[in-house]
Image (cartoon, helix red, strand yellow):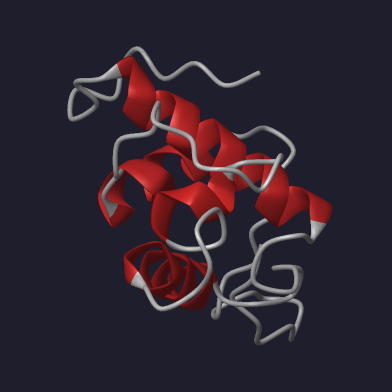
Amino acid sequence: EIELSCIEQLVETSQARAIGDALQLLGDGKLLGGSEGRPLASVLEDLERQLHAGGRPVGEQGLDSLSRYKEPCPFYVMPRRLELAAAVNRLRTAQIVSDDAPNGNDRSAW
């Protein structure tokens, strides 16, 4: 459960729905081939690219790719990268490693 009420940029519940489903699919490894060990900026960039991509069958392109049922979903609104990052920031189970980690781990991943 993530508290998104303090993210002032979210103006539609459909944005929150899209963010929640995107995080769920990323966590399950079903979106972008998983995100473990990848830089957060790279994950968000790839997610944004996928959400803006077309040319795939209906239900697998754009915001429809967030649907767990792989069918068109009219109840999503496109979240921006900033809102996605803010939601990840509030996700207690996210494990973020900095580039400047003192233990010698030079990854910036989640």
